[in-house]
Length: 200
Image (spheres, helix red, strand yellow):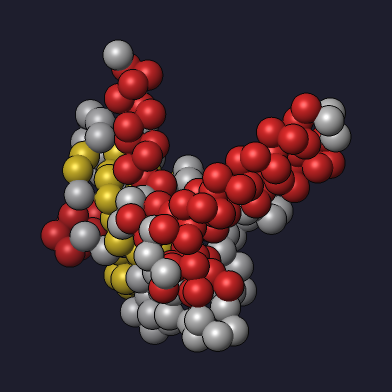
């Protein structure tokens, strides 16, 4: 866990500071909470998100009762030092309602979500799961499927069929992620390589 910015929080102006909690991988805002110096010290020490409950007037470790712990990847303050940002990797829903986020609106389904689905399907019965069958075969079969899907996408693009392009692109993305999973490569690693190329 790292501090991303200066200044460090100023609890001299207020005993409680607002904490924006953000998914470290997607950037999605998950919740708003409050922290005092005790909660921040517990977060910094443990690597798990701690807050101060205004209703109970007590220190609160997120997930202590629900199990939905938030592992903090990075901490930051705003430019005045009077608001905090926790960038976290949650192990479950952030909201007490069971929603991923406390804020309204459905989050778009991303490649990271698809990667999680594929990882989960690895544990399924290959007899009933197409994904499990592909993964059980090693990289060879997913690689052949990727070539097939790339050809179908190119054909749809040349035919100028927008609907088919969308569907074939989705199929290609799925099979690409299955191939990555079979090779032990993550979306995060691919993104890091793209970022490095962009910097160059």
